[in-house]
Length: 168
Image 1 (cartoon, rainbow, N blue to C red):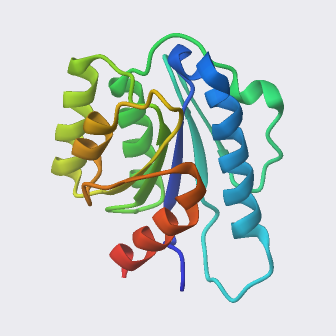
Image 2: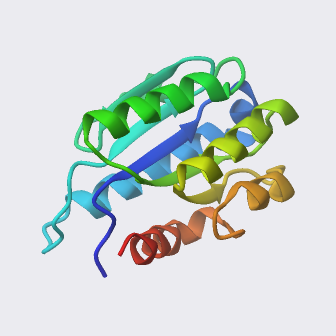
């Protein structure tokens, strides 16, 4: 099954992700996603982008070897910088509606979640979410996901497949 051509993997690196080794789980999920994309296959893909989301934003190609410090956690997840960064990627790549895979615990301020929810709906983005951590805020994550489903870390491949089906 082909994967979406314009996949953005957003990794929540806010301070809540330092509890219960959540940043370690997220880093391993990114490693899995990298390996899935980089294995020889007949997939016709642009390089997916990995976006680090906390108070600031950082992004790298899926082909970059990310240093352990790249996943360091700090501050809170702010919607404004994330939205601006994704909109910038969308315009630079002439991509109207990319698929987004969010790796997060969903422990955000209500105003940030509501802002992100409104932007996702307005932008007509496909957003699947993989919950990270036993304390993940499933009601918030479920509301935000475009398919109203939250995937467990071991189901990251399934989440990617559903994004692929939605992008066709």
